[in-house]
Length: 247
Image 1 (cartoon, rainbow, N blue to C red):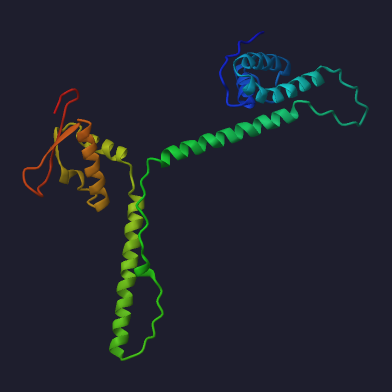
Image 2 (image 1 turned 90 degrees about the vertical axis):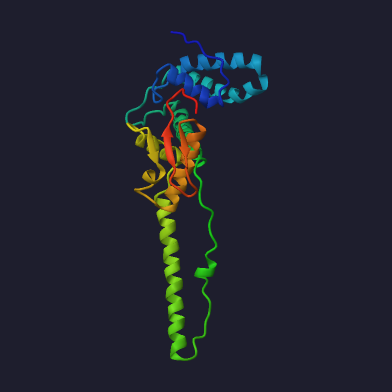
């Protein structure tokens, strides 16, 4: 049975080898080295005509495949009783293929993670030193001064706790603009108009108001809705624009 090898420029020798194995539907643990070597050499031969320098990178693995093929063609020596079985010439190659596939999957996962995090916007870290700075204070004076110092300590501690709670809420409620646009679009189902106050009614936090407003601006830019505010600081009336209709 013969196979036609596509003349793609693979990233490296192992990319080509894995492609040939998977294309032939072979198990990586039972590689038919004779068939794979023939196909691999056919590819390298064609690659030499296109890019001789690049083809040199593939020659090392080609020599290894030829060596394994030769060792498998040699007649096996009959084992004496109690003698361990000879190692399969393919064992080392199989191990390297498995390791390569594992690193390739990890690289793909990291690429996906980088793509996901590139769409995330994180609030810059604030300088909290004025609230958390530990200052050495010598508490001397009257009882009234000590009471006042303790009150100031409690006020500062309350501010720190409030900052931490606010930051934690923002982290928990962090959502992408795409998700908020989908939520707002769902609110328009069966309705032609909405008020901005309705959209933020369930979560009137500053973060949600800003996220909702930015999402509405994006929807207006895309021509999905139009907005109307009859008076300054008044509620905003949102009207859905049917698909294909100009505003």
